[in-house]
Amino acid sequence: MNRRELLHAVGALSALGTPAAAIGAAAPGIDVAERSIADLQRDLARGELTSVALTGAYLERIDRLDRAGPSLHAVLAINPDALGAARALDQERRAGRIRGPLHGIPLLIKDNVETADPLPTTAGSRALAASRSPTDAPLVSRLRAAGAVVLGKANLSEWANFRSTHSTSGWSAVGGQTRNAYAPDRSPSGSSAGSAVAAAASLCAAAIGTETNGSILAPASVNGLVGLKPTVGLVSGQGIVPLSPRQDTAGPMARTVADAALLAGVIAERPLGYGRHEPSLGSFRLRGLRVGVLPLPGSAHPEVARLYADARAVFAAEGAVLADLEPPAIMEDLDGAEQEALLTEFKDAINHYLAALAPGRSPARTLADLIAFNRGDSAAELALFGQELFESAETHGGLEAPAYRDALAKLARGADTEGLAALFARDVELLLAPCNGPAERIDSVWGDRSDPGGWPSIANCAAIAGYPSLTVPAGLVRGLPVGLALVAPRDRDGVLLLAAAAYERASHARVPPRLVP
Image (cartoon, rainbow, N blue to C red; front, side, top):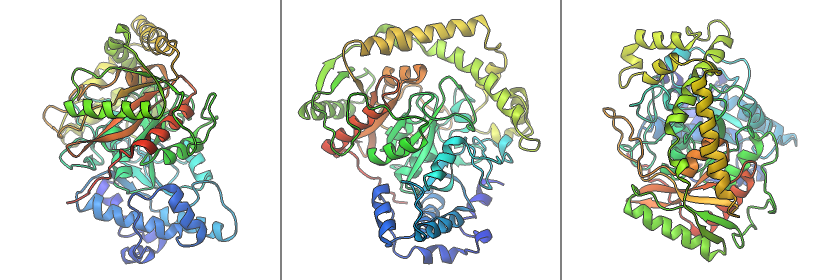
């Protein structure tokens, strides 16, 4: 089923007996724009709103903004069971059973995360267009157990942006080109492009993205969101199409820190880690928090420099103890080692993933098969850019290859022991840097720029070493969002959320998108 056919579920939903007109009728006058999960839950608890009406309101908004209007192309597929699930949750609520903090709340899931709904998990590739899973990924099971409605699947950069050196973020052969929520001609960044744009545009209450390096933080930053990349291992990676099991993780993408924290708490396999601090987002203050401040990258936009200075002033005014830190030189020279590691890990991981799929889920059983599939389907799959990373990965040896082991050793030193660990040894609890700059124009000729505004080395190292990282909105540069990047030691995800919530409350920096055609 292609994107057009899947999205027709909005207008049909025939399996649920719900014609298009009934969707609007189920949600008369309901405006879901910028509504927080807490707000929605309050209305649901009071009986002023039903999950069916709420789900219908999001479906109507998807139809109006994602398919028409600015045509964001953030939603790859609508779950035809969404209204049925919402109806069942309403019945449970009337019977006095509340599953958890997400009861009746519609979410979108990045389409490299398996769900048991009648939808494929494609990773954006036509090679997985028929790959339906009989089971939920564990993180999706946890969301459903907490009461979430899986509204559908979000578009993404195909294969989590690990196919070509000249790829265009937010494009997939299945879902097309996702567009930035703040300016349709601007890149949504990636690879969790659809999750970011959908959450920013209020096409869902919040969304789940995944990150190997930058794929939550970058699109969240350029779409005015809070995005949390958890400590690797905090969220189960089972049921996620892999890139690098060593670095891969799923995480929440939301319009507020409170919503991101709520989702993180649901999908985490263990406590979030608040350290010495009380886990209360509402009462936490920055006073006394020791923050290491990294310098502005030389390539940063001048207006990003202004926003970063403003953010630093907020932290200082709120009583944080700030220390200026310089990143060790070794942190800036990890790209080659990471590329070597990712190419080796991707080949091993995707071969295992494809080989384990049930018959009929994909014509490809190996990476070599994927390369051949793309060549045979070149008009669709290779129309905009190639598959140089696939081809390079196929030439790599296994996980015992000397080049791979050498790369891991360099990454461990540069990102961790002589990198982030050395910075945290300077008696700081968090690290602060500007996230990437304002979004660039979508460019299907050259693809993405490698360093749009200076990707922070602390975020890069956090991804490599498995530390938690977070972005929170810092304001706009000529109408385009810019975020801050925060990094904490492993298993201190909660400290990131506390600090981000306090900054969010003091700065009021997020500005919603206008969403005009």
